[in-house]
Image (cartoon, rainbow, N blue to C red; front, side):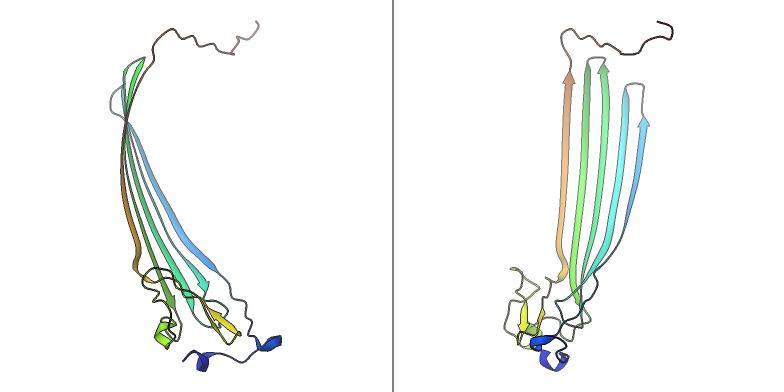
Length: 178
């Protein structure tokens, strides 16, 4: 059980205190392409990827780390077509994918429930409550699962712009010597 894994008190009032760091590690990548199909049509594309891990202590116990992993992908493609000096059509497509995973590492038990403590299973919603052992220490298991969350979204947008009426553009540029 958890009590056999708990260290002796090291602070006043029979409490156990420990300072443990959080760590963040990740990478981001982006590729962008712009291409003029004709003098009136332009195609742009972008792919962006971000992945990383956040490691944090499970409460104030001397063991275990909660590992939160995230992978995010984004694709965006835009076609711009200038039909005339006063008419432009812009079409965009986007796709997003977000994958989240969370797990406890290095703990004597996968969750308080595995140790015989009657609490919410951290692999399902709602998120589990923390567990306090004799007022000395607490363990806060993160929601676990593979994947904990997977979202995919798509977007389409088509905008036509037409300028009508009179328009005048002035420029603050002056020639030297005037």
